[in-house]
Amino acid sequence: MKILHTADIHLRDYQDERWKTLQRLIEIAREEEVGIFVISGDLFDHDIDGDALRPEIRGLFSNNRFKVILIPGNHDIESYAGGEYLGEDVVKLTDLKEPYNYEDLSIWGLPFENIEGEQILRKLDWLADNLEKGKKNILLFHGELLDAFFRRKDFGSEGEGRYMPVKLSYFKGLNLDYVLAGHFHSKFRVWEIENGGYFVYPGSPVSITKRETGRRKINIFEPGKTPGEYSLDTPHFEEVDIELDPFKDDDPLKMITRRLEEIHHGARVILRISGFIDSRKINLNETELAGEISKISEGKVFEKNLEFRDINTFESALFEDFRNKLEGKGFDEVKKKDLLNLTLRAMMRG
Image (cartoon, rainbow, N blue to C red; front, top):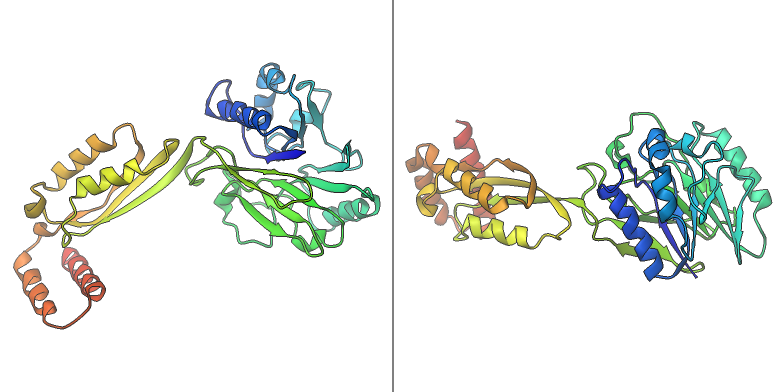
């Protein structure tokens, strides 16, 4: 039996890309024949979105051959507060003391609350005393793991406050096989818990902000085995940095075209082009090159940052004299390139 684990879908509108991502995850769950589909918080972007989308989501969460297990996150904590019906396959874990038992699994929910420190530890102490012996125990959690270095932006559009912070040491000796977490958007991450078990953030399955770059992933695994990265074809942002070198024979437009062709079809490209060009060599000035870049990137690039400069916009005789002298100094090609670029930048500033 397999488990599919995801989080932080942040649904807002019916049939938008986030909705279609959830549809794709349901399809993957069927294809992979999973028995449990876990969403560790923030299914909805806001509670009001949960209210609006509830009638439509019932269709996705019904008539499947697996259970959909949900916990509230900090964005949708009120969406599960009452008797809201989300589909016949749905199990909502809103109380740590009420686990869901499935075959040889006990699945516990520690949903988001505005608590930290001793309050969290008291809950985990209670859990330690009540975990099912002879079963594999799984904890669903929505909050921050303090052991790893995170930037604030790795959690999406959150503010500066702490969101239910925990440390790996909190779970030591609890006899938990897995902590399936949500709230960390950036990427798929796994930590081993001392004395056994895994703590897993799958990352968001679709880019919520421009800061979530790279192909999105989910966690599909069999209980008793290591967590498994499953790469998705969902919309995501991809940063492409290209530095132009006027001393190479590469055609800038061909190089940019080649790089864009290598990008995954689901990517929204954030393109940054820096460095220098020699307009006499490529027969294009800065404005003309920018225009050609716009043509070849149309429909492929979400955002462009064109920072390149033409070495012919300043007096080049002095630079050529420096370059000729450098050739006789016996430096390797890497060192020569670094010195030439430093000189170019200094002369441009001048």
